[in-house]
Image (tube, rainbow, N blue to C red; front, side, top):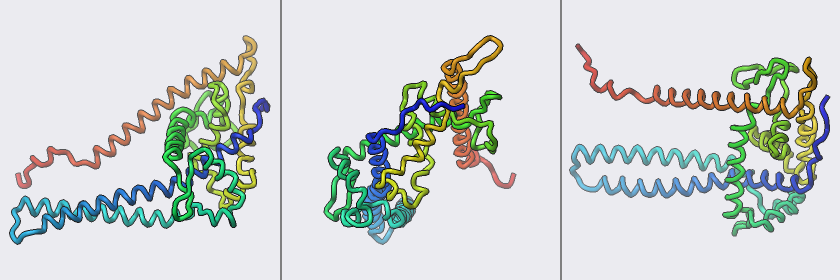
Length: 297
């Protein structure tokens, strides 16, 4: 029987989470724009270098090799620029214009005003909302929180309390009722806001954006209702207590043991993943010793 000892999601948290979602959307386009600007500079520099290397009628073998190398680099940079420009067009919907706020996204105006007052948003000359330097710092902190969530909480998403094992989304089907999501209980034990953990979990999986009307729901204040229900439905620490032959085992003792085991497993999974990545990289790079091999002996 799950308890409901956790408080409901506060209006302040709803406002903060809503602002972070809008900032994430705006930064998706802004990071592409920044990447495009960097690639423009790279392409321009490489074009100058190629033009300089082409000068003159006679070139040494070394000069020809350098020219071909620079041409290849230029081609790769141009391809990358074309890809980024394509992605920018695909992510145009991430931008927010003042005129659009006054019509289609009118309900977002209070939240956008809140972000302006906090110094995370400004409006550029084209009347588009743009993250400020402070806004980019807030976004970077959000990215760091997402990375920390994956490292410290993901492993507790599927726990079999009866068998004392952890499910792995990469190898297990994770079907059936034996799996319990203990991320809220872990957050509660660690003194971390459970709503923030679930928010990061949903962001990490891009769940908010699966609903095409998420901005409308955000403007109505209902977007985080499901998140609130998720937190209320999950196990709290006190739900984990049980009785055995020696008496009652507290939920605190149970969650401490689960966290200890989960941390060990998470480190082991990261080690295996890192070794796998290093192996793939090593296999992709030919061994230098092949240069010494003869062909007809």
